[in-house]
Length: 336
Image 1 (cartoon, rainbow, N blue to C red):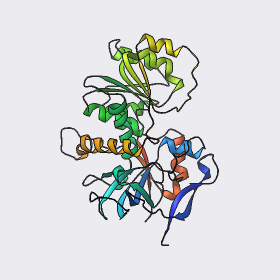
Image 2: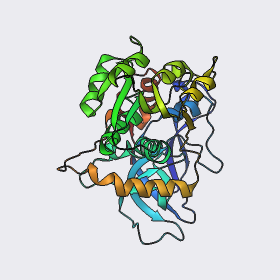
Image 3: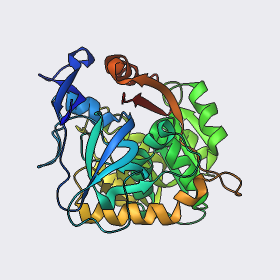
């Protein structure tokens, strides 16, 4: 029906079973925004936290889940310049609203879909790859030759960070929860992989770096790994926290050990950043990384898609991520 659309919804916080598909009003693009008909959208950990009532959208953002989507431009809001036109294939970085048939996006947060790339692959890029790009370049200030330890190395952000490290001339290492995930990470370019469930990654990282340690740690886990992180952080290293999958409560002398290493503890969240910051990030990524998604070059970046679910199976998709079964991105196909 005109003016309506289908979207993923939940009435009360809780488990995946609380999700369902609902008919809601189609968004109208505001000043500087573009309306995109979404063909695919991908899941992120933030979606799980929001569904549990632990991560509210930023003020003014859509309450609908979904931080990234891919589709086509169907309408331009007031003040949108000539960069985009109706019919353009785009992928979008969102503060919310991606798990729906239509989403309104600031024009500065759109990225063109590379020639020949599917909507499914494109939908798995914006949130994960822009997060990894900003962690490495905007926050961690990665330099050529540095070692980067990436936690959750087989996740969407993890698989992106491995490849972006190689593009920057850095050396990626990962922690993961299975030998299968280590193999995937190594195929993408990880120099080493450590199964945190079976081995002490702090000691293993030191062994792999001749007792130097990691110059940058990308940490979405939090409290569970803090001691081992400090053990393998290089002097003057940067420990970048962008998630707390275990907990944020630390019991122990973190600051003394961090001070002794002259380490920097940096926090980073992308969703709550200003539109100006996101525009700057999207522009840098589009110029510096997007060209490498084209095939045939010396370095080929590729999104890793774990599985694809139709929107009506969103409960199953969330459950797969809850169970930590995914290697790469879980994508939702949006019905037309």
